[in-house]
Image 1 (cartoon, rainbow, N blue to C red):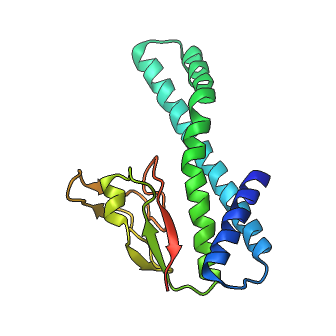
Image 2 (tube, helix red, strand yellow):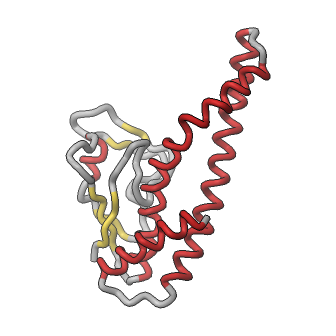
Length: 176
């Protein structure tokens, strides 16, 4: 948790500077957010691991393969792939989570979705500039996002802040 807390502190300081607000107990806010985020991250990764292992068992059984070898191969493959997957997604998710918390603490009433860089996908570009109340999500679970130049995307969970998808590099900024 120290890495997540330190990362969130840097983002929280920047978000507080952006809003020019004096926030009492910013360190305590970061601590609570980091603890909550770490717990949620651990739970979600455990569920992902369980799902992947169950899939490997089912595939091995269906294919008449050695289940133990399939499981060992799967777990060993995680050393190469999972750190990058997790760090990419969760660095953006954690940054936006603490930024949103700080914006709310600073008294901002709206959030603005912002694409970063020139390589944003059509889905993210369609979100660019979208403004919502801090109490409302950018997209509700089950909602369709239909950019003109891409296939529609149905979000499976409520999107309160970026990322929208794997590899998403969008951020939020404070509105009013």
